[in-house]
Image 1 (tube, each protein chain N blue to C red):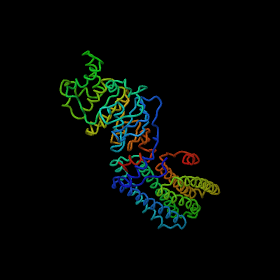
Image 2 (cartoon, rainbow over the protein chains, first blue to last red; image 1 turned 90 degrees about the vertical axis):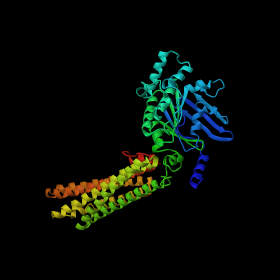
Image 3 (cartoon, helix red, strand yellow; image 1 turned 120 degrees about the vertical axis):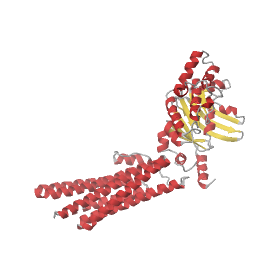
Image 4 (cartoon, rainbow over the protein chains, first blue to last red; image 1 turned 120 degrees about the horizontal axis):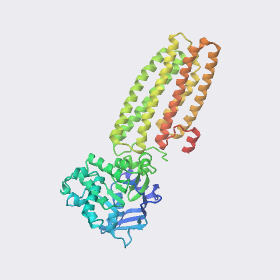
Length: 276
Length: 237
């Protein structure tokens, strides 16, 4: 670690409280005292954060800061990692997501996820969207399924491009189309929250712009949390921005404030490219 | 609120250099504008036509710097997409550069009026009545440039109060000129020229305050335009 990084680490160590506005009235999700461990190594330290309803919150921070680990806590995807342990209270509305009685499959339908690398099922375009709805018992009726697939693809701006080839393999689509299909797949099961882990990092600029536009439209009806390495993207798509550093939540504020006049010096240092 | 502006220290050394160059050019432009005002006051004091020519030559350099700095700021916005303090610096710089260029124009305007008085055998003596106002404006400009160079909000507020004194002095000059015109209608033409020159000096004071407001925005992230000075002082304390 060089001198600048050392002093930044000291600043993080001395930061005990998140600055800005991490808590909200009537949030969609509530996180209190979240601590996450990978075996003996602690990755997230005492995070308190509310996720606002029908809003986009972006999570930024240097590599290894814990933003993706935190995102995965929000739909228990960390359960798939044997050595990962999550402590604290994480609530979806008033429901404890880590309650032993919770059906984690149903939870992940309510809190859907889109990953960095588009991962359509090795099925047709139609089946990619219909599959989730079918196995979650939303509908078995062909007419209703057709309508659901069409609506989901329209909402993701993909319908016109694929309506004449719904039975073709999804893997034949371009990267940007595949990612939009994954989003369509997520929204087909009528989630309340959509988690996106660097959804555009594998896409070209045009596909990225298309997905960002889609995020903007979806935020009217869904709560969205997006992890991104692109600060410009965070500035463009989100209403709130959360900055993580070495596992701590340093600052949460309105995006416009974070990018013009952040409160914490670490936030300023990161977004101006003085640390990374 | 930020109390210190981070300058330099970017991971990209090239970005540091680009910002440094812009700052240097702004300070150079400030120096040239100060020289313009100096020469203008020289012309006011001594009726020196060489000083007037110098003001015009300096104005050409000032205009060229304005364009160069604007272009460099545009390149930074396009290439670096600056945020937070860096973004505020670029915005404050483009605005301040505009104000500096306007100060140069106003100084040139005064110099041209003195030249006009010369050319028409009018009384240059009447312009000497503006020397006190001119010296106060020159001092304010100098302090403003220091405020920008050091990025100090405290001195920005002090300068804003000084401008109020300049406005008061300008008002007194106007009263004297009106009385002068009332004494003899033949004085009106000369008095009007002096009045316009006084107005230009007062406008230089206003541009200095704009620069101080930009410094406050740069350092604190607060937009204090159109606010009373006492409110600004309260907000920053």
